[in-house]
Image 1: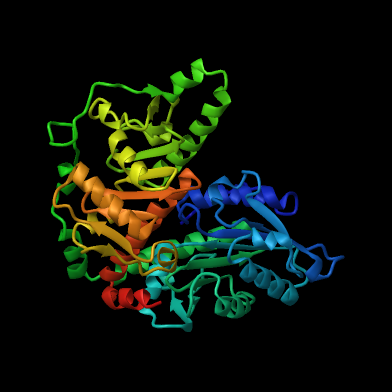
Image 2: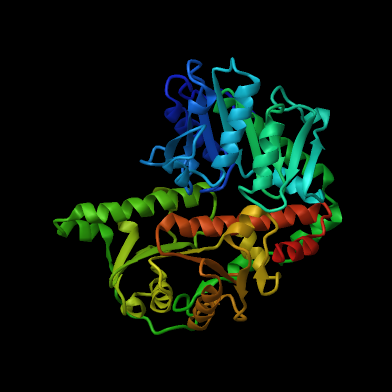
Length: 469
């Protein structure tokens, strides 16, 4: 993947701005999913011992594309465990050891940088490796670059993200290598700045994509592609629209957040709500989680529900695109303008403040034939959604009965649930973007499953292993 000129702020000039600049590029080229992965840098002040140096690292749950937000990056000592370590990424211990080992081996380095991204295709390649332990993947000469050599170390953890065996083994390997793939997980890249790390991981992911294409068994790929008939997505409908059966609906058109803000003296309150919708909507669009323009985001505050207009362009969300109505008014809303009654039903039954209903391509299609659950075979997927329930009400109509089945499924998972052919619903008590993160993780997990299947991996045995993990 040729990145061209990156033009980030130099690490020695402003290490935090350097992280912000590179984080935006990681997100732009989709090298990572929404709130996963992490970055860290250390400027080598040679007058200080290594243990006195400061490591800047992304905070747990931060989004690499939005590191300019306050508190998204924290500083912590390389030597001692301080209070900022409780805020830092769950893999902060690994980052500390990586920088310490690198600076011990190369004390003349001006700086040290580390980037961890959930590289989908590189992680999928490791599905053929048994593990746990140390291995390597050969990179064919035709896919090697000035950044990527002939082989890449692989470490398969016995446990998972941030595990003790990773902290023990990965830093030692990275003291002598520019990068490593973590089995079923992603990859780390190291260098004197994050641009070097970024170029390495981008080339690694590009090469991995090409290797998987070479390894793909045509019969298996054809079977995957043919499991669901063409046109399945056109059968989707929401009850109460297009003449389909559903709840009684009225003629009410709710006010928009724009009109509320105009007539309320406290317009800042509505601007803050809108800002959260706009940022999450932009991420939703950037990560292509709304291919059929059927998604909806909502937020309940007290007795009020804020919800996006049906068919909205999430990359260009405006205040006129967010309706506001009261609990109990959902079924009075004019059909086809929003999913008001759907989200209202979930809010009635679930203790939650945010709901996302998305229809992402891969996981929605996979839900049609996967049985009663989606079982991820990647570490991130297992960490977030160990088992994703899939409800099967027997139709592609988003009816009252189908929504009740979503509520039942969400009661077992408390994060995300799918309806066959109708997409996924996710809930969060804390922030809107978390609902998107849960569903984007499910989408990535299904992509990983299908990539593994296409190269002949026994996915069912891996799923069984992860169920016991």
